[in-house]
Each structure stands twice: as C-alpha cells, then as structure tokens.
Image 1 (spheres, rainbow, N blue to C red):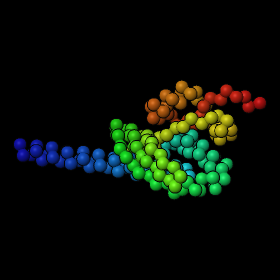
Image 2: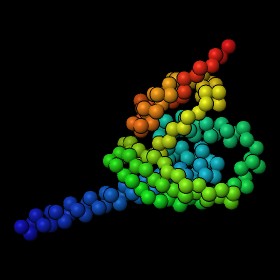
Image 3: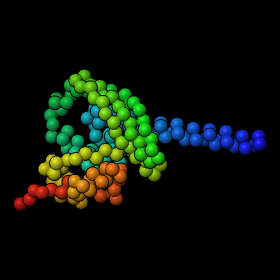
Image 4: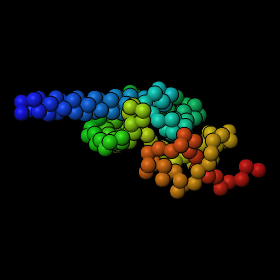
Length: 171
C-alpha cells in the first residue's frame, strides 16, 4: 500500500516537471521569436521558428525590411513583449502576447508546434505572389490557397516551400 502511494507521488512529480519544462520551452521560443520580429530582426527569429515559417513568413519580412528605409521603422523600436496565456494541446500550443513600442500597442497570439522535442513558432502568412521573393526567384513548389489553409490547420507540411499559386503570367 505504501509502495503504491510513493509510486503515484513520484509519477505526479514527474508529470508536473514535464509540464513545467513544456511551458518554459514554449515561453522561450515565443519570447525569442516575438522580440526578434518586434524589433525588425527576422533573421534572429529563425532559430525559434519552423522551417516553413522561415521559408515564407520570415523570408517575406526579410525582403520587406531590405526594401525599406531603416528610418521608417527606427522610431517604432524597441519593442517590449509581454506573454500572456498559454494553451497547450499535445504537440501544439498557442501563446497570447502584448507588444508595446514607442508608437503602437498590439495584442495577438502565435502558434507553436512541437517537433523532435523542440517547441517552434509556426506562423505562415499569405504573401501576395507578386511580393513573394522566393516566387520571384522561381524556387519552391506552388500551392493553392486551399492547400495553404489546410497546412495551416494541420500545423505542418512535408517541408516544401509554401507559396500561393500565381495566376499571373511571367511573360
């Protein structure tokens, strides 16, 4: 009787530790990603993001930042990120946040997925084909809107670059 009590107690302690580690790892990934993005450093955000997020979302923001005069966004830094609620569901998580800059305030949430034991931000934006730098370079596979939405719902795909199917001719 006493032995099973201690086994149950030990199992509860292990589960509590695992949950705490999950939460801490999710917070670290979310905080790192949001601070990098909030301060116009998408390259620094890559270490906290899924490859798909890097191939679409971060590549797009890197492109936009390279095309923009730094004075345009310099007054909107530094960004301060405050994390809010965390909802964990097995291998997915959602983190709410508040971003404060000298010019703006923003509330939002981001999605994370657990891959190979690591929590990573998984945010795929829709990039207009005309503005998608990978598309302009001709790389990667093209996906329709429906396929992109399905991949977003599932939180993953087979590693191919996401981009919208262009209806424009390159002639």
